[in-house]
Image (cartoon, rainbow, N blue to C red; front, side, top):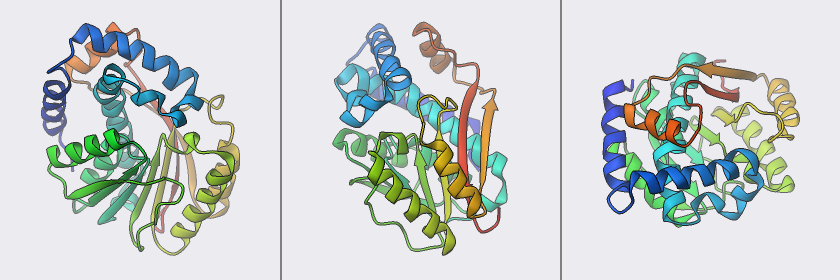
Length: 253
C-alpha cells in the first residue's frame, strides 16, 4: 500500500516540475481563478477551462490533482479489500492521473493503471505521474464516455469526470459501467459532495444501488505536505477537510 513518504516525495517533485517557470504567487493567483471554474462553474470544465493557460495547468497539477489523490486513496482504504483486488485500472477522464494512481497503489498487488483524457496536456502529465509514482501504466487521448472498457476483472474509475459529460453520453456511460460490474469488474465513481453541481447524481445512485452497489459520502482530515497546505491557504481554499461522494460496484461489496 501507498506510504505517506512516497506521496510527499511525489509532491516535492511535482513542485519542482511546475515551479520551474512560474512563481508561487503566479500559481496562487491562477488557483484562485481556477477554483471559481472548478467549484462554481463546473460546466465550463468540459470546454477545457481548467487547462486554459500555463498558470491554471500548474494550479490544477499542484492543488486539485494531489487533493484527488488523497481523497481517492482514503475512499479505497475505507471501502476495504473488495476494491483492492484489480490488477488493471482504467481511469476515465484521468486529468493528471492522480486518482487512478492512488487506487493502483492501494491494490493488493500494484495494479497497472491506464488513463484516458481528451486533453493532450493532461495525458502527458498523467504519464509523468504514473512514472514518478513507480507504477506500470500509460495514458492516451480518448473520450471518457466511449473509451473501450477493460476485460473483467478490472477496475474502472471515473473521478471528477462524469459531470463534464453531456446528458446522452453520461447515460450511456452509466449503462456501460453497470454492465462492466455485472460481468466482474469493480467500478468506482467519485464526485464532489455538493448536489448542486451534480444534479444527475440521484439517477446514478439509484442505478448503482439497484445493481447491488453502494453510495457513500466521505469526510476525511488529510495530512498534507506543508507546501500543498500553504498553496491552498494562500488561495483562500479550505484544505483542512477532504470531502466527496462515491458510488461503488464490486463483486465483493
